[in-house]
Image 1 (cartoon, rainbow, N blue to C red):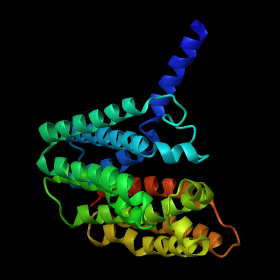
Image 2 (image 1 turned 120 degrees about the vertical axis):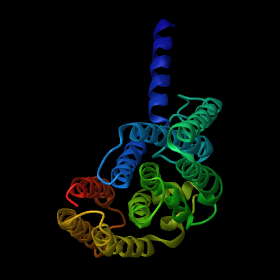
Image 3 (image 1 turned 90 degrees about the horizontal axis):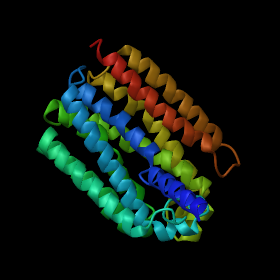
Image 4 (image 1 turned 60 degrees about the vertical axis):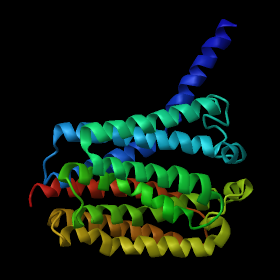
Length: 294
């Protein structure tokens, strides 16, 4: 019995650790730092940065937990997600609901007290769009759900920018648009990999509803749009020539990898998905590094 208790404790601990989707939280922090740094004109304001990133991290974690709560029936059907905290029984649905709600509420309180009203409003909007509009309603009804969900995912750099700058201008909007465009091929490449899983769960995302060929065309089109989009930070004076060179080089590699997949007979290629993660970190990292030279 003692051994069973230890195993259950370990299972619960592991379930709680993966429940908030730490990989997504990490990417949000990276994009939030970019917004904070550029919004602060090349200076990372320690106090604002700490509270903003804490609020962003908690709101993202809370939204991810609530997404797990809402999707628990879908996750139990899909082979890819059956090992998640709720389908596996590691964490109860009621616990996930209260944890997710608590994290979101704490994040909004932190943002309101320590950061400002605008950042709080943007954070609340991101949570509402992702949890209510996307997860609860649109994900199960339309292949265009990711376009709405992508708005929420694109808001962290905008929140960081607003927190540091005190308002939103063209620079903040550019950061937002970059993530809006980046998210679509990032998600669709994963959706192609698990198309049968999504179909079995009744999730009509683009790969399921429109088919492989149409999804490959959309991925190619959106990745191609990265080329002019990634030039915008240089054009509007956010970053310098070193950023532009690195961003263009990374984008050409991204386009080449996508074109290789597009012109192939394969119906999936996770190389694009994995590279898109590296791509975002490198592009935003170079934007931060080159901002100091403006």
